[in-house]
Image 1: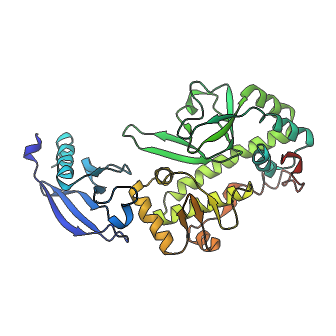
Image 2: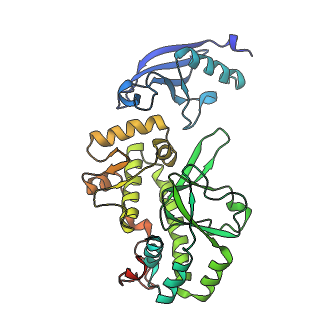
Image 3: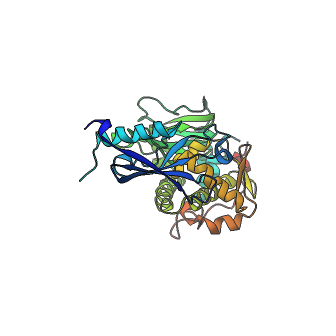
Length: 93
Length: 253
């Protein structure tokens, strides 16, 4: 199954992390929730140069990365990463 | 100063004779520097045991995906690879987090001392039990939410560093990186930022300029459910001699 067949949608969401990192996206692949993405806030992450990046806060199935910190410069990169992961390990029926 | 931490810890297991203390001190005479971010041994380490005299190091493993997991910190006076006599132990690496001073002790020399000296035998047995006890506590600590997990770790470090005079009543120098702490807690470096903020906002602990400051130690211990019993500072148990109350001037040079 090629990437082009996977429809990844990103739905804006506010995440209650109890921190300034609250801007998020629910990532769906073909209608199934596969990841929760969060935008790293300026307030918390400016010092280490990560502010503005998006990271996988939680992943499911093919997008489960454990505690590995996976970051992207923007949402398109995140979308491509999700599509690639799903293409390697397709969603179960 | 060099052997002080080593002897200070081992004497928690019970009193050492002057001769035993002297034998242990003699093991520490030829240290070598290890730069930060390097493993403290390379190649086959089966024939020697490493003693860290100064600096922060860690025992760790790296998964195929790249995740590093730190399974314990190594502080001054701690032995590494003590029981690495078979291939089963080689997967665990020991890396210097800061510049360290390390002594290589021939395993055969340590075995001779264990055979000849009841006090040293008891002390190294205690050190083994203590490592096991701490490993159990770290497994349990992983069950706690990240804020509590960090609180528990900070309490452990405070307690262990106080023992060897490297911490004040309310803080200690902690020149490691946030990634190191993340890998010790099993959380992402990104999440460490949030956890640190939460502890700072709650006035439980701050980490700035490479220093941990704990305004209210008891509050942090309560929050992190920290009970120092697992560190075995009370010695080997009721059947064995209690810690020496003798001053350590003989080894504090």
